[in-house]
Image (cartoon, rainbow, N blue to C red; front, side, top):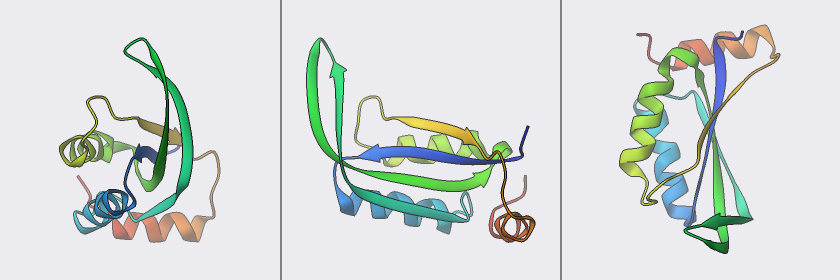
Amino acid sequence: MSDHIQVITTIDREEAAAEIARLLVEKRLAACVQVVGPITSTYRWKGRIETTREWQCVAKTRRELYPRVEEAIRQAHPYEEPEILAVSMAAASRTYLAWLDEQVASE
């Protein structure tokens, strides 16, 4: 299993996505956060089908930092239950992973 992950969240405002991206990089919880959007999300919430315009944040980090990344996202996120997903990196260039490791905090 890879020591490196991507953490994905979505949020309803582009400015809020940029704030989460900056927060994670400033705290050295992610080496890079890409903001993608707008996207359209359709989901069931409290018995209703909702459709929302959102922006997706994809943070590159290390697996051991996930609890801190999740907590930082939850504190900055306005949603009652934000999407926060961790996805393992199946493969990546050795040099990219070395750069990633240099950018994030070590526990």
